[in-house]
Image (cartoon, rainbow, N blue to C red; front, top):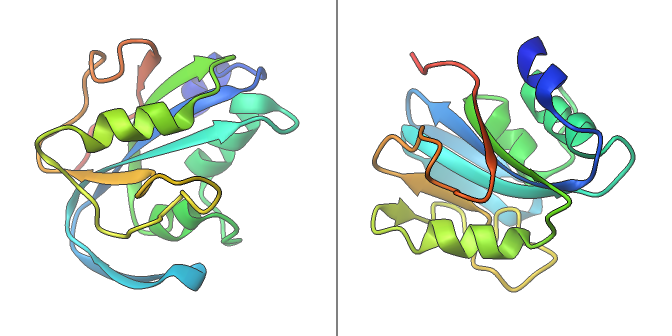
Amino acid sequence: MAAADAQLSARPGIYALALYLDQHQQLRIGALGDFLFPAGYYLYVGSAWGPGGLRARVGRHLGGGSIQHWHIDYLRAVAEPCALWVAPEAADECAWAMQLLALPEARIVAPRFGASDCDCPAHLVLLEKDPLNASLLLQAQYLQLRLPG
């Protein structure tokens, strides 16, 4: 993950993190409640406007950790990062979430996941097909982190 950290900007922006879950998991997502997460690829859209920008926020997700502050932390504890799309200085994470939700194979597993401060149905989607390609979010820089498995 160090190579990804080196490529990440300290500027603010938005990102989409792909996680691979190799087996289904029943997870409690903070105050959202309990959900069954089927095995597969999950894409989480977030923003990084605090100190350290994308490098700090995405670096935290890539490193995992025991503190569960954001919804994604609960899923990250059991799923492996496999790809990342970043857009420094971009601000509309909701547009990316809606773009991913519009994909024919997209499914919402946990309504409102990552979307507690907006009107989106969720900022996390389960995709039935492998999403690991640079053209998924054309306006973003794509980084493959590792192949699942």
